[in-house]
Image 1 (spheres, rainbow, N blue to C red):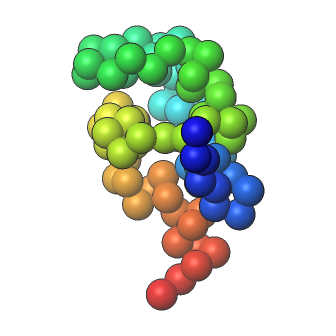
Image 2 (image 1 turned 90 degrees about the vertical axis):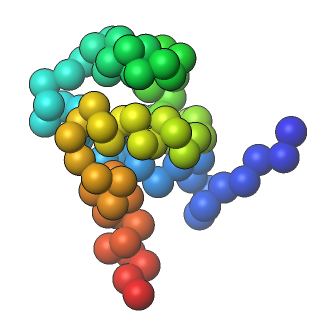
Length: 86
């Protein structure tokens, strides 16, 4: 399987995802349950892997995570935008 990394990272939202999840007082299990309600099969162990930067994030997962956390996609990607401004 061809894997693609950005600066050796599997995703660039890992830190922000954890931060916003905690800010919303959600456990990984609760976040997984909310994802299920949106039709996305993302279990607690997979959320843990995303937060530990061990799993890629699909575009529709990113959008659903943002909806649940009441943030924009840019909020989750803010570390990237700060590091690589225009």
